[in-house]
Length: 546
View (cartoon, rainbow, N blue to C red):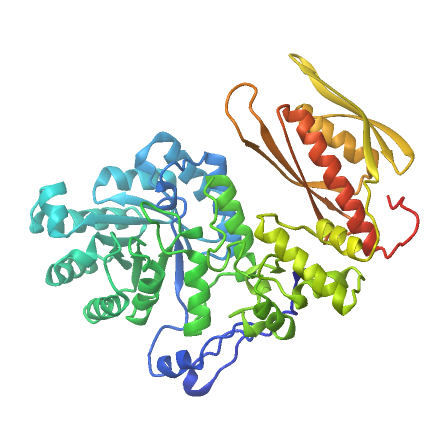
């Protein structure tokens, strides 16, 4: 089940010039009180490095086409600068950056470069707008990795920036491991590159070792001795990347480096969605991000990288706007701000009321009323009791299962209406996979044949065709339970209906034959879908609803 509140109007000016965030965001008044006296930029630029630092996530390797898709999505999201990659790294990387740079995107396209002419030449060849040049400056990096002196480091930084500018590139420079670099030496490097015209200076917390108060002071100190805009680039080794990014902005940074879903090396980078929403909610700051597209871009990046978003991930996680506990659900149904700091539609999500062992009367009653089902007080008590019992045994109830329990309490049986009578599937070398099914739908026998990319696809298509063209496959999941060539597998099939988009039905089956098990799971899902649609249509007689 999902519920949505109407969109809210954008923010307005409050006392002292502080910009009150969107009315769909509900944060503590103490934030406004503390920040009113803080002078911060009205707008913060977002540099997204999902395609560079994000791709450095272990076991992530994006194809050129995938990188272009993500870049296009980030551009539509409203990212100011897209760090498209590290072109000197490989021919494929250079081609990907070149493809993105020539795609006609509105965002500034940036390439990462070490402080040398070869790397800058690769960026020039890729046709990017800007070069993000970096050179490690901390003692451990200079002595143990680069094995160069401080003077040599300054010379390399100046030469690289000058070379990039001479070839028409906008330049941003990072002193890698800045937060472990001697502050006086940082000032020396920053002054030297400013003298040759660097446009932006980034402050990387490369191994995530700063605390927010220290980050604010650190950036503020650098800000007092630099003339160009500052950026911050924070890693999440101690789980403080977002907090440190916000602290950096409070210290005077006008740009933040982020990745979608917080991807990146080791524990990852500051998450774009969290930084953007925090800037808006807590600081009242503008970014160019269309926040209503956050959930979509998050899903796209997760799908293409193969890195799942954890369910309890802030802003975009599956559970970010899900509620199960009875007290919480009661509050949410009365007023969403009781247990939500922002309205889900602001970030492209929907609210979900989940039924489980913590559910109470209000959640279950609300779900049933959506389908026109009303139970007496004692019947509801029994239903709540059964729902909790099922949940405690590890069973997750979908709508059809909830209705089945409710009908049982009401004295109505819900026997399967759709039965599989015949099924065949053919596949082989140079043969288009084909499946034929015969279904008995409440006495109406229907036969259908379909082709597909494989026997499972063909079988599911044939079954949907036999029942209704409005049925769509929302999700198919296959998991091995045991090993070996005769392994047992579990198949989960999730179906929807284009005529009733709010209906989602789940079917599960376990068996040794993947195709047969998939068909059995689909039959179960079709029966549950029928129950849901019958109930929503308010029909109490006649079972042919398709």
